[in-house]
Amino acid sequence: MKQRLHFTVSIDAPRQRVWDTMFDPQSYGEWTAPFCEGSRYEGSWELGAKIRFLSPSGEGMTAEIAERLPGEFLSIRHLGEIRNGVDDTQSLHVRAWAPAYENFRFSDREGGGTELQVELDTTPAYAHYMSDTYPRALHKLKALCEA
Image (cartoon, rainbow, N blue to C red):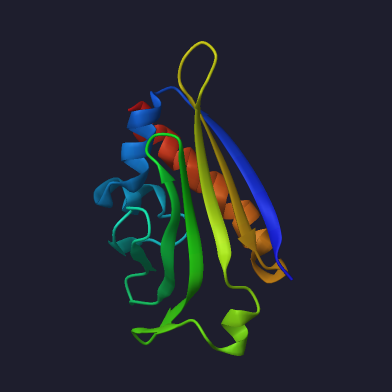
């Protein structure tokens, strides 16, 4: 069974700067470090594109960009896991949770800056980890955007 988690962060920077910082290959690795030091992605943030989220060992998640409105909204449809370099989208383990969505909504704050809202699907086994780690990652993103 999946559950949906919600996170919000206020960032003193314009939406375009927050968008660019989130999805730039260099800064992506910085703000996602709380999840896994050395995180990276392969692929594109374009609508319909395949994208792989990888740890330094090559393990990770395989996904596609489900929706994209630049500077406003991005939805990632997670489809499976990557183990030993192989995308797994069909095992019973993966089919128990996939697809799972990770959505980013960017809006202007009154008085300036950006409000970033994140909602993501997770399983009960990962809910505590995500509830602890995602706010730390967003704090790093905020610091990068405001620097």
